[in-house]
Length: 156
Image (cartoon, rainbow, N blue to C red; front, top):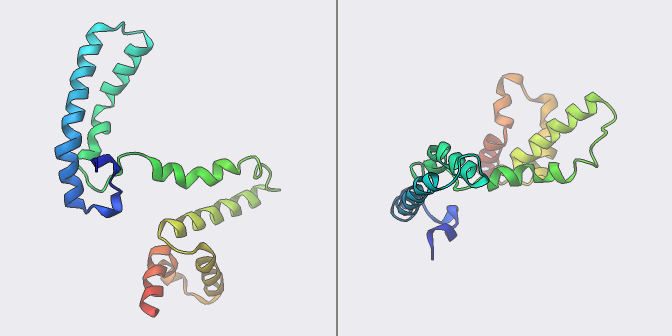
């Protein structure tokens, strides 16, 4: 199976780093050589010249995932996190007031955080809203999704 088809959760950090170093880095090095060669052959103001310059000026960022196994190879997780908001943008254009928009932003953030931590957003919000009135402010961190998940697992 090619390295780019291996899901991140199936390959540990050390194995992922080794795969990227052994398989991705040589491809990136060859691509960098091609970019440098192409730069000498294309007009700087042409679309191709602009693309080559852009790739070379962002080269460190492009290659960073090969040195840090915790980084994703692409930005799909970030794109998926904002997908629901982008799809509903016209539906949510008018919240009724600034206060309604602020409340919606808080709810969207809570739901996205719950999903990111593998929680059922409904169960998390139901428990969160039931506990908030009596929960001490100094222990608010216990209600964050990652801590809530650990407490729920310990209780089960």
